[in-house]
Amino acid sequence: MSTYALELKDLRKNFGKTEIIRGVNLAVQPGERVAVIGPNGAGKSTLFNLISGRFGPTRGEILLNGQRIDHKKPYEINRMGLSRSFQITNIFPKLSVFENLRCALLWSMGYKYTFLKFLSGLKDANERAEQLMEMIRLEKKRDTLAMNLTYAEQRALEIGITIAGGSDVILLDEPTAGMSKSETSRFIHLIKEVTVGKTLLTVEHDMGVVFGLADKIAVVVYGEVIAFDTPEAVRANAKVQEAYLGSSVADSQAGGH
Image 1 (cartoon, rainbow, N blue to C red):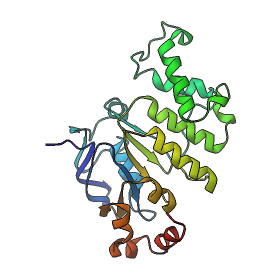
Image 2: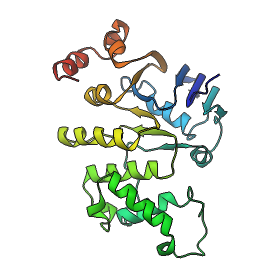
Image 3: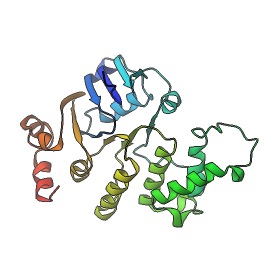
Image 4: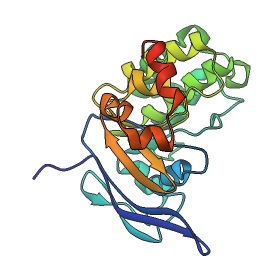
């Protein structure tokens, strides 16, 4: 029996008496790129918080590569192979691009929290940080402090930090929010390149990004997944159009996405 990269079984989350996530079932194959869409307040961010360990579920199971991760701490889940970026850029503003990436690499490369070695002497970590910088197109900003990067460059750096640990499953929370159309287009290509061979879940409002990036789309409405299928099937799903997409589908079709 094949193991899913990520599987949610009857996942539920209550805040007080209010049920936010209402029995979500989702099974994501290794290497799939899945976009999670839905109206504001549908529960998308709560779902990401449950998967990444920020919240514990009220009921249900979350499995990462066949292993239960519900009720584990975020750092434990990260070490099991899942990394997450956030809507708000989450970087070290007073460290350079290179230093941000090197910090993100240390644990996964076996250095953990030992300070017995000077970082400049960690040849393998330094080389890997250089490689990551090239992947995210920031090699020319190597020594620039993260706080002095443009917004799009900061988001690219965060993607680099997210993939630095070598996780197989990557969660991106609205990665293109606040970007111009040209920045968004470049960012879609960047995400595709750096997540080759990895499983990707992304929350995204931009339908151009969704249809340009995802192998499958999970539509969340009122804490439930009402559709999980290919972009073409979701685009044609009357239930989805009625609940959420509507004119956005027509717009994306007109735009060639």
